[in-house]
Image 1 (tube, rainbow, N blue to C red):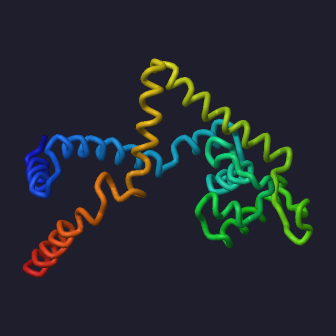
Image 2: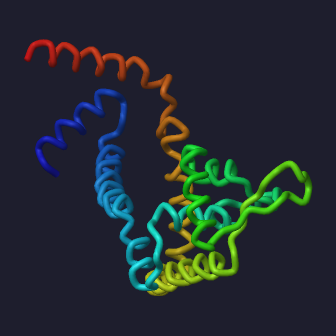
Image 3: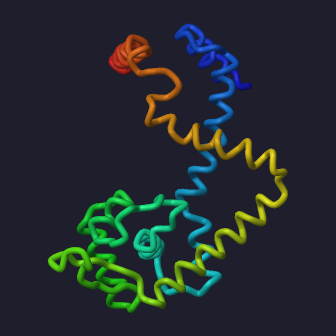
Length: 201
């Protein structure tokens, strides 16, 4: 462990966080940062588009997948009909951006608008047969790679990873492993120390 990390470990110990926990957090962070950089470049998505010869960009593919709404990603939505606002919500993007991309997909024959069966005043969006074929091909491509990778894991390893990964994925939503109120004074001290250090430079 680098000396600068040992200083951080000491700082965290004074804040009441066990050194072994901080070492684990440092290891987790290193893995996550490497993963984030790879995910941010969307390596798998770019490979799928290139190797399947698809005339799409990743934003268009994302919208098509959000329209299709696979249950493993979006859950079992009790509302069968998808509107542009539904797409925006599923992808956490601006509704105007979702609308532009949907319009482009419609122009290219990958999506279509229709009247809602439950409310004729409402317009829904769905994939055409071409759009569905593309989404299913991309998903098969993805799970060929992911399934191939996980095939080398034992069932125990897979069963251990998933609940832990799910639990860890919620850390930012829950205020990390400790409630922010518990760390409020420490964070305030950190903010004050930083302000003093910057002012002295």
